[in-house]
Image 1 (tube, rainbow, N blue to C red):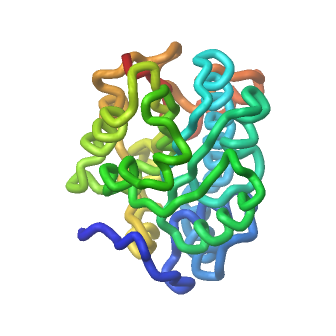
Image 2: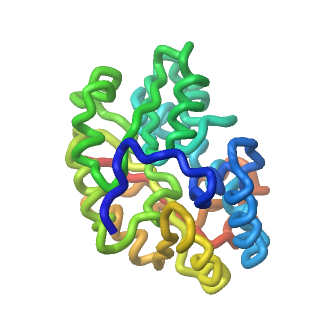
Length: 263
């Protein structure tokens, strides 16, 4: 598949994976086509909403780790989706008030709404970018003016790589992004698992803006090759440094996650 252009046209008819995710999280920035497709996925896997919420909880804990324990004050969130609640900039700035965040997304509605919502926050920006073109993301002049690539940053690829086909070289994308940041930076990554409960739902995404490519634990672990994993390593969503025993219930959900340092 050819990479989508950065000025991808707004299309309310084709289900969009970002807007479907917004629907799973209870958001309002979605359309009938997104809701209908999302409900078909929920019909296949009734815990889809739980999976989306568990992923957001992991994201919050990982950002808190990066800011509080690793002392990182810069965050590059690629495929971020719409800013809603408990987003990266909110979590990071609670720990480090001076933290700077750049959100990158391709979906026009995400860009327009996100830029409007963040218009008064000088420490947070949202720019257009296609994960399949990592070299263009890291070369973006607006992004480079906002983030200092000579200092460590956190690169966030949260529930986005399963929308990249194998032939689009997802491992190469991760390597390119981590090669662009300095030692001391961290990778935050989560990914849906190739689980029999999810597999039937992938056909819905075949008719959406991106396919869903589910991967095994071993394939997900391979994204961290060459990096130093933070304990407890690659785990289920609920097992990555849970701050509540209630989150252990997330361990029955088909996804893996991890955080790793570039040394």
